[in-house]
Amino acid sequence: MRDDSCDFLIVGTGIVGLTVAWELKKRHPLSKIIILEKESKVGLHASGRNSGVLHSGIYYGSDTLKAKVCSSGAKKMQEFADEYNISYNKSGKVIIATSEDDLATIDKLIKNASENGIIAKKLNEHEVKEIEPYANPYQSGIHVPETAVIDSKTVVKKLYDLLKGKGVIFKFNSPLLAQDKEDRAILTPRENFFYGYLYNCAGANADRIAKIFGKGLDYTMIPFKGIYYKLDPERNYLLNSSIYPVPDISLPFLGTHLTRVISGDVYIGPTAIPAFGRENYGILKGVKFNEGIKISSELLSMYIKNKSNFRLLAHTEIRKYLKPWFLKSAQELVPELNSSDLLPSNKVGIRPQLVNINTKEIEMDYIIEKTENSIHILNSISPAFTSAFSFAKLIVDESNYNNSTI
Image (cartoon, helix red, strand yellow):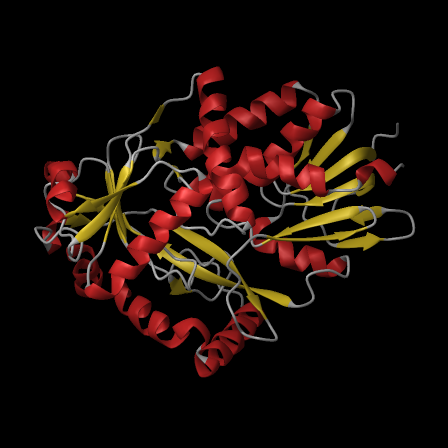
């Protein structure tokens, strides 16, 4: 086989791309796999910036792809960690109501847990406080004991090392620019590659790449910025594990929450502030003029149409740029927090959220589109990290690479 050709070409070295390569190598040990990455190393974006929470799947209805892969994915991630001596902590979490309006959602989440085979217990106020004494539940909450935390960067690095050891070829600083459909080739700034089957696992850029292949035409990506504060270590006693609010289940965001990560530090966040670039981690850093104009136009259209109460979301989240408003949202969970407890943090993430350009609705589930020789993973947002090993199996099962030859 030529140096510039491969059986499988994967775009993106986030957790989805790496686990797809892992799954392919399990099934086809002798296959040649090339992974393209536009950055200089793996895990620089969502996969290396998330909080490392291994979610249970309680938020997702049983008819969704997320529900199909989340719980099993968390188990597979823990099995991988056990095999390769990666630390994790099955610390559990509580989800608490903060108002009367949340009580019906508590019941909905318990129903999801029952249908998805998730261990979860509905609690009264007293029972919540037995687990998290400083929490402030309104009448009710849920305990999810199987929720765990892990160091996401360690997982990504281990997969990278293992895949290299299995002969997988990584091409860094190699963004996919165009394709030659007839020759089944793709163009990067440095070289061209020929492939049997292509997996688009490019995360925040997956919609762009899908469009090169004539897919994802009904969607665009709108980035949302997640900002965190770190809890003063002297106040870490306010939290035993993790405290989450009951989410608005019409939206894919979980609300400001408190999480004790694998290091023992406690982070508070994230926000879900509309951002103006796919890598807009700072105030202006990562903003590109043309991209910013397009995103602004889509946000304005979503604001006007106000699907899924988007207007309220925008108003609520933008205010969280100001520390007093951020603190107020955190105090709904733990009233004893004060401004001096919230220390500045360089922990910032971007959630690349897919939006239907026709309806202006935020897509809630993973979306998979295929051509004859490629598969495109769109909207691979949380719980993509948790789900990764099971999600990769589903992706490879869905692909029709058996009909593809170089």
